[in-house]
Length: 584
Image (cartoon, rainbow, N blue to C red; front, side, top):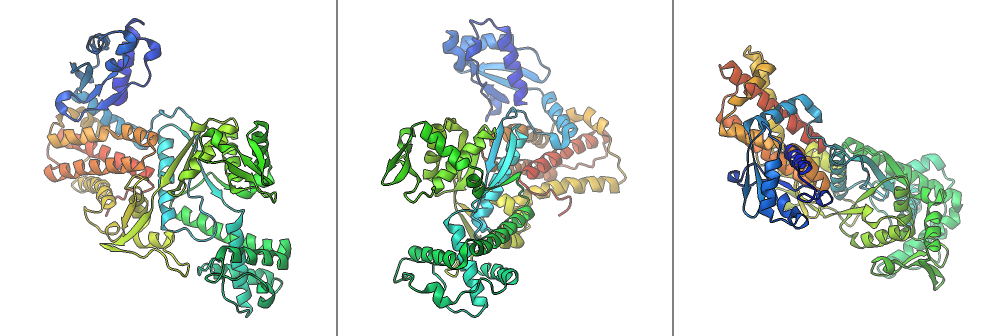
């Protein structure tokens, strides 16, 4: 209904002379729902916005706009308040028409064209494929998937992408860890590196390596560890694991080491894919970091920087003048040994996104990536791309609780609570919902005991129960032998005059506005809060009134209303990746 008010205002602007309503001064028309019903249903400060350009007092301009408004049976009256606010009072027919729209559009209700088809790439999770997804990754997954769904519903053309970090040191550490567990399978004994991957998930991968390679990759432990620097605590754990990796590559050769590397990557990426698929999270593309080097994308990005004169040499390395573009310091793009840095890969990947035609790049990253934003944006600008195309959303940490007791998330042995374990305990619906209960900028306390409770204190249960209650009413209607006449119900919507009915109608009509705002603000939690408010209004209505009354017209009108509630709840839960059960 907000769009109805906007259309009326724009029609009024078109009817006014240019000097009174300068066309180039009209941008976004600010229209807000009022908090006080005495001020109407919607209010606009457009007269205050245009007053300076029109060289008129805001209140005088407001009077001219109101006089030019076309009449509408959906607006009962319009008033000017204060210095020039325009308040709109909707007629009951407006809410009735919106309810009919809910029923007619069904699963499509709430979808808008606000995004205008703008191409947006949402990259999320992108966890290093060095182990199973943990509960922190789950928040990234739920947020990213829900945000992508919201953007799609708001009229954007959305592409979902997972960036596979399949190059670099962490993957080498994993490959070496798998190989060392492989050696243990053949009776080799040695202290496992303190900085290796020690989780139990590594052992099954090593078993697969035994099955594929037999004894071909076996080397004596004495040969593997001879002459290496000390491990922690006596030595440096990073220096030690790097030495182990170099020794492994030397003893196995490129082909042998790649065998362990590729097997580990294949196994863990497969597990991550399955885990996310089971969680209802799907991608349009899994993008390989290695492909950036193989396809020449990194060289292409570096050539652009060089041609633009923003690269210089220092201490044998190549540096990007990031400080010229707002970063806190310059960044190395090619080390003195000729190896390209992670940063070079990062800016090449983002350039690749732009060159694929995406106008906005939404990255969902961990809270420790603050510095990442300025450096990547600097790289984009230096390569001729708009810096404001990059939109980074930082995810704060998750803390698990059972009731009031904090759950230990990980141990020194390398074990941690996985996303799969959490899902098995609380279910996909609760996990998807609880992960987006709060803004991504807030730390999240995830109470697993509450998430599985069948009580009104559990927000996902409370909302799903609203949907199930409507389904139960419809089943009872059939059991009682009543037949619902939709046309008769729509014709009688004017009889929905009870305060609870008016509250439900008003709450339900806000849904399209919430979708648009949640998409624009990258805030799935706004939809969560809205669904709770709608469920609260519905449950209050349910507890206060009978739906299956003897009066056929009133009964059918109320059935139309609760069918609308059911549809909006189902639509909203679908965007959050949560089911809408018919019975609970």
